[in-house]
Image (cartoon, rainbow, N blue to C red; front, side, top):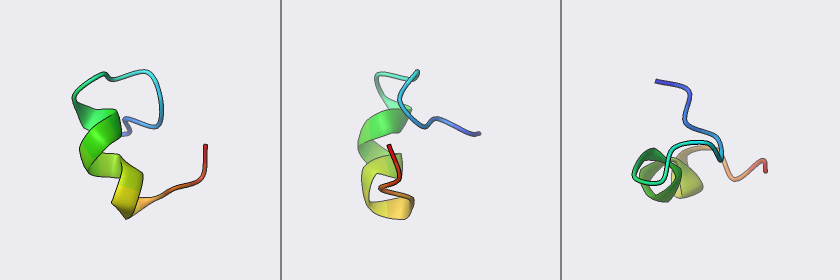
Amino acid sequence: RKAKHGDSSGVRGAAWLWPQE
């Protein structure tokens, strides 16, 4: 799932995956 900054729960896990806000 591409949760860049739209997913409240995914953004946390994706923060270290791809910190490209």
